[in-house]
Length: 182
View 1 (cartoon, rainbow, N blue to C red):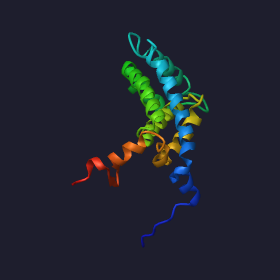
View 2: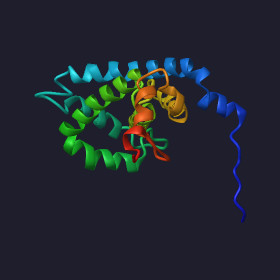
View 3: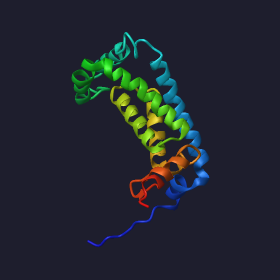
View 4: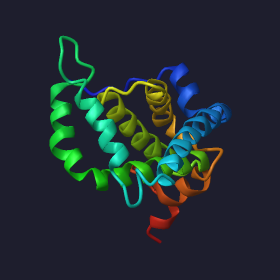
């Protein structure tokens, strides 16, 4: 089989590579980042998430998710329920800190436009876990917007810190100024 390069569509190039759309991705990035920061800050300042009673709120959420495992059309799949029961609930104290500070970190990184694609990926991963646990709320919208931010990572942070950081760090296929051999 011969090798061919299939060109990206003009629409995809415009949406995900053109700096004229950086303002659009800035708005998406700030909206998603603010949602994460707000949710994370509420957790970081709550004793039920971080502090003497850390893990209490998470355990309540997860026990609710476990209640959605059974039935003809369960909201939570049995494999994920097993993961919750055996891997997360026994260590809810630690996971509680990960969730709270992870949400804040994703929020701050997205608002600043710092390593936007990576921050959006971790936000998407958290949204996926919330969805798998049977929590809908804003998660489908945040999940979808995060996919867009991941695909548009080259320009999603263009009006942010990435405009400075990415040329210094580089990409997997091109070394940045900090890593070039002189």
